[in-house]
Image (cartoon, rainbow, N blue to C red):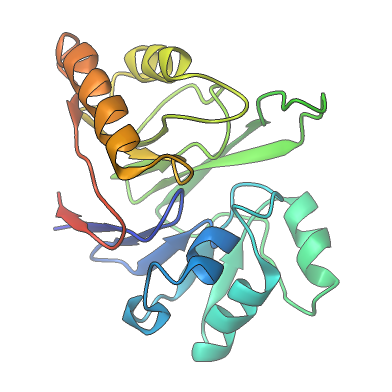
Length: 209
């Protein structure tokens, strides 16, 4: 059994029989006070897809690392360099049961396209970070739905191409509750035609897979 808890935006806690893992500890979750940080639970692995602050806030990573002695942070070299400046060690190789795919972040308005690492954890969930370039997905795909570098249409096309059993929407923090409901409904209707279920989680909610 696997549980997936959405904290805010792209930050997820995925608990499998192997471990509890937290994805993309960005500033939305740490600073917004939408989530009681002490409710996160005992995570032992932290996966970071790329260097942008909405996916990695060094103070949040430090808070996670200081909670227990055996927390390991996994990411790419760019994030390792960033966190090294804060005295945080990052492992750039994947642990057992986890695979990754190095792709590029989609082009942002400034024209930048930084490195991005998509992770698949225990054959259950794929977190693509901020990229439409990953080539495969686990049965559950964390799907960015409204972003400054893409569109809901492009996101739906990305999900159709990878054809997971279900998607969990992420990367929609700046939408109002009504805005999220509208986008979720649109995605549900379209992806249902491809046999893909949309599992919507509001801040702090959990799904069992």
